[in-house]
Length: 355
Image (tube, rainbow, N blue to C red; front, side, top):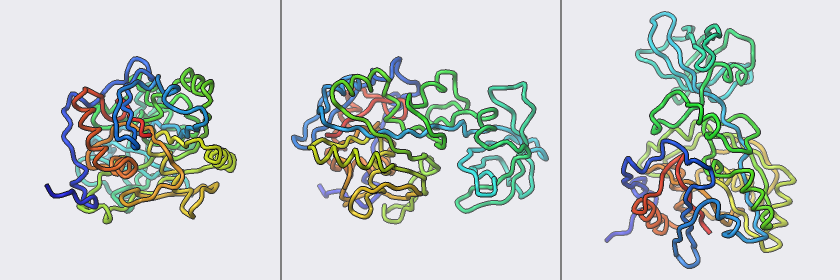
């Protein structure tokens, strides 16, 4: 059999039965199953996320992404036609204009007015957005006719932007709790850093008691999460930029951990991309800015030793990253084991720990 070309998108495809997609979270965050991959022995073991204090070493350090998901999805109608309209807020420009994805039947025109009803506060008067101009990559700029900051308005009018495979445009009450990490602090994401959804305050406390230290970085998950790879070859795909930050303190603590023989365990691909983006000079440095780093073969990792991550969609940049980190054949085998053993996939699903 011919070895797959790891530069081809087709190499990262797999079939997932519909019933393996997790549309609701587990009853408890840390009761999710955990597939443990040992790269040194090429073995696979079955655990639960709650077992992490026994799976990591006493001098390891986990790195969490403390971004907070915005209620970035807004639903409304076009004032002139009455047609349904849906938007996904991404960021605000320097002049306060909203940058967003826009979906409607027909063609929006500059200066059109969109009326947005509050999803969770029906007593509020509609919010009006005036569409300004079409931006690159199919985005729009828009201006609110209310002078409040975008984040404040989204809290009143928006809903959490759940992935399409959950089959609900409006977040349920449970989603407001569970589609957010327990340590989320800095608002700015349009999707959750899903590996972090498994952590409870109790689990973090038990990890600390076992000697595992914790550091935080920030990466605001952006439109790249929703955009599939459209090119046949990986080197033709351009990642959308996302803002991230790592502090002097976090850098110093990570360096101290590695110097003492401990491992850096990135929680989620967003933490990986932040750490590796801040290591582009060859060594880890304090840094903030935008990154469009696409980790693909034959990338050499500089600052990450282990990875805790969920199971990702076929042909996604996230699956490419994980395959690059753990080895293509090993990840392909692990995914098949997970499917055969009934693991739950995607945002609300189970996880894998790559040692």
